[in-house]
Length: 306
Length: 330
Image 1: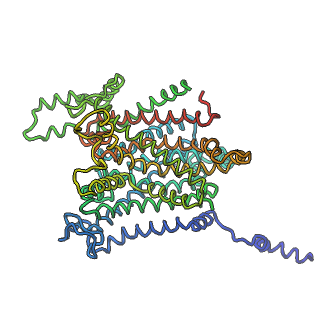
Image 2 (image 1 turned 90 degrees about the vertical axis):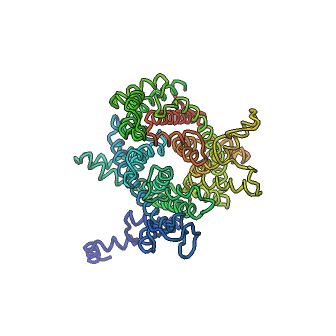
Image 3 (image 1 turned 30 degrees about the vertical axis):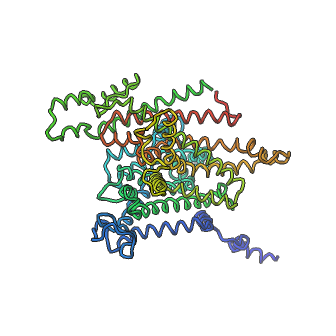
C-alpha cells in the first residue's frame, strides 16, 4: 500500500471501521425485540392479548347493547342476536362480558404498574442501603408475605370500598412485597460492581445511583415480573370480586359475572363459561408473553431450550 | 438444629406482633361493628348497645383496645366475638382442623403430582408427554381457583345424576361432612368425611401443582445436565437408581422452597374452595367475619394463618438440611 493511500484511508477513518465490522450495530432493545419475535408462542400470545384488549374497548363501543341495557329476551342461549346469550333479567351477556373484560384488564394492568413501581422503590432502597434499612424493609416484606393475600385483600377492600382503583391499589400494594424481594436480589448483586463505585466516586447522589444506574440494569427482571403481575392481578381481582369484596354491582368484573352465574351453571351454562374462558385466556397469554420476555432478556435462563 | 428452630420462631414473633398492630389499626377504624344493632326495628334499647360496646371494649380508644387484645391473646384468649353466641377460640380451632385437612392433603397431592409430572417431563424432554404436561401446567396456572372448583362441583353433580336416580351419589358436592349419618360408626364417619374431601382436594391440588411441576421440571433438567449425574451413569449405575438416588434428591430442594413460600397462597385458595363447596372451615369464617366487621375474629384468623405459614416455612428450612447434607443449621 502506498503512503498516499494509507493517509487517505486514515483521514476518512470511519469507513475502515464500517468495513471491518460489517454487522449493523444493534441496540440492546433491538436484540431483545428480535429474540422475543423468534418466540412464536409468545408473539401469538401477545397478538391474542392485544386483540382481547381491542375487543374489550372497541367491541364494547360498537356492540348494539351496553352492559346496563335490559333486552326483552331473558335467559336466552347463545344465538345470532345474542352471541353469548342473556341472563335471567335480560342483560346481553356479550355486552356484560366485554364490560367485565374492560374492568378486569384495567385493574390487572394497574396492579402491575403499582406493584412494579412500589416494589422497585422498596427493593432498590433495601438492597442499596443495606444494613438496618434493608433489615427493616425486608421484615416489612415478610410481614406481607406471611399472610394469605386474598384474606388481607378482602379485609382491606371491605374497609376501602369497591372502586376499581382501590382494588388495584390493594392488590398492587400486597404484590409489591414479592417484587421488592426480586429487585433487592438484583440490586444486591449489582451494588458491588465497578460502575456503581465509579458513579459514587464522581459524586452521584444515592437517588441518582439508584434510579440512573441500578434500576435500568435491573430492567430485564423488572419487565418480566411486571408482565407476570398482570396475570397475578387478574386472578386476584376476579377471585376477590367472586367472593364479593372486589368490584361490586352495578359495575361488572369477570369474577363478579361468575359469582352471579354460580347458581345457574346447570340452567344457563353460557353465563358461567364465557367469562371464565376470558380469564383463562388473559392469564394464559400473559404467562406466555412473560416467558418469551424472560428468554429475550436473559437467554441463559431459557426454560424451553432452543 | 433445635436451637436454630427456636431462634427462627423467636425472630418471627415481633413480625407477627407488628403485623397484628397494623391490621388491628386498620380494622378497628373501618366501621362500626354494632351498626346492625343500631338500625333494628323496633330500635334496640341504648342500654343494650352500651352493654355490647362494653363487652367488645368499644368504649376504649382503639390503641387501648389493641393492648387489651394483645394481653388476652398472650393468655390464649382471642377476645369476644361480635356474634354473642359464638366463641372465637372454639370456632377457630374446630375450623382450622377442617381447613388444614383440606390444605395439607391437597398440598401433598399437588407435590406428588408435581414431582411425577416434572420428573417425567424432564427425563423425556421434548417428547409428547413433556408437551402434554407443560400444556396442562400452563392451563391450570391460568385457571382461577373458583372457576375450576365450580366446574368440578358441577361435573360431580352431573356424575351423580347420570343414572337418572336422584338419590344415588358418587360425589359429595356440599359441606365438609354429612349433617346426619344413619349409622354413625367411626368407619362410616371416616368414609363420609373422605367422600366430602375428594372434589375440593382435587380442585385445590390441580391449581397448586401447575407452577410446581414447572419448577420441578427445570430443576430436574439442571441436575440431569450436571457432571455427577453423568459420572453416575458412566460408572454404569442403573438409570432408575441414578434418577431416584442421585438426581431427584438434589432436584427436590427448589420445590421445597417454592411450596413453603406458596403455602400462604394455598391457604387463600382454600378460602375460595371452601366457599364454593360450602365447608364450615376457615374460609367461611373469614368472609363472615369481614361482613360482620368482627375485628377480634379477623385478628384471630390472620394471627393463626400467619403463625402456620411461619411454621411451614421453618419446616421447609429444616428439610433442606435433610435433602442437602452441605447445609447446616447452627
